[in-house]
Length: 349
Ligand code: B12
Ligand code: SF4
Ligand code: SF4
Image 1 (cartoon, protein in one colour):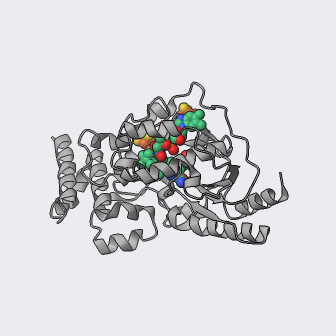
Image 2: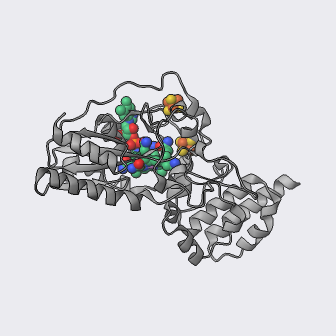
Image 3: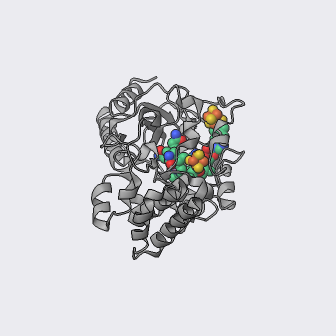
C-alpha cells in the first residue's frame, strides 16, 4: 500500500470511520438487481430512487464526478441494541438503534469534509471530490462490498465479519488514483435463515432484496400516508425504523467494535414511553427531535406510528390519551388513533 493511501486510511480511522476501503468508479456490479427491484415497484413511494437522473447516476459514478478515479468507502458503527437493556414504566416502543441519538446526516458530512481537507493537504493542492452519506445517488452497499467492507447478507445488509452490520456508510468520490481494495467475495450466511424467520412482515425476498413496501423501516419512516391495515398488526412496537433482521443475525452478536458515541440516546433510554408522546405539539416535537433522525417523520408520522404501536400493545391505559388524539386536526392522526382504540377495545371484550 502506498504511504498516501495508508495516511488517508489512518486519518479516516481517527475521524471515526472504523472501516475504510477503496474501489474504482466502475458501474456497480449488481445494477441489474436494482433495476429489477424498481421495475417490480418494490421501492413504493420512494420516487427519488426511480427518477431518470437518479437512475443514470446510480448506474455510473462518473456521471456524478466525471474526473473520478477512486471511491473511498467509509463505515461508522453505532451501538447494537443489545447494549441497551431494561425498560421503564408505561407502554414502551422501539426505535432503530441508528436513530437513538444525533442524526447521522448532520454528523457525518463534517467528518467527510475534514477528510477531504486532509487529503488535499497530503497531495498539496485541490482534489475534485463529492461526498455523500445515504442521500447521494449511489448504490452504497454495492460499492462498499467492492471496496472490501463486507458481504451482502440475506437480510440485504452489508455485513463485516468482525463488525457485523450495525454501521452507516459514506463515500468520497476523488480525482485521485488510489489502489483499490480486494472485494470480499465469500458469502458468510451459509445455510442460516434467521433474519428471514425474524422479519415480522415477511418482506425479505430470495434475491437479497426487500419488498420495501412491507418493511417496517419504510412504513414508519418513508411512507407518508396511511399504513395499510393488514400490515399494522405486524409492526409490533416499532415506532421508527426496525432492527429485527439485524437483531436475529449471529454476526451482530460477536461484533467487536463500540458504536460512535454521537448515536447513543441522550437520555440513556432506548425505549420511549409512548403515551406521553401522543401529546406532542408541533412546537414540542420540533424542540425534542431537532437533532434526531425522528424529525424525518414529522409530528404526524410519529404520532401515526405511536398509535399503531399502542393499538398493538392492547394496553387499556392508552385509551384516555387516544381519545384526546381523536380531536387532532390532522385526519391521518385521527384515523390511526381510532384504529388503535378499536384494537384495544376489541381485545378487552
Ligand atoms: C432505500 C433505502 C432503504 C429502503 C429499502 C432498503 C432495501 N434493502 O432495499 C428502506 C426504507 C426499507 C430501508 C431500510 C433500512 N435501511 Co436503508 N437505505 C436505502 C438507500 C437510500 C438505498 C438502498 C437501495 O437502493 N435499495 C434498493 C436495493 C435493490 O439496493 P441495495 O439494498 O443497495 O442492494 C444492492 C446490493 O445489495 C446488491 N446485491 C444484491 N444481491 C447481491 C449479491 C451479492 C453477492 C452482492 C455483492 C450484491 C448484491 O444489489 C443491490 C444493487 O446494487 C440506502 C443508501 C444508498 N444510497 O444506497 C440506505 C441504506 C442501505 N440503509 C441503511 C440502513 C442502516 C437501513 C436500516 C437498517 C434502518 C433501520 N434500522 O430501520 C433498514 C434496514 C432494512 C434492510 N434489511 O435493508 C444503510 C445500510 C448499511 C449496511 N450495513 O448495509 C444504508 C447504506 C444507508 C447508509 N448510508 O448507511 N433503507
Ligand atoms: S427492517 Fe424489519 S421489516 Fe424490514 S426487512 Fe428487516 S426485519 Fe423485516
Ligand atoms: S441472519 Fe443469517 S442469513 Fe440473515 S444475514 Fe445474518 S447470517 Fe445471513
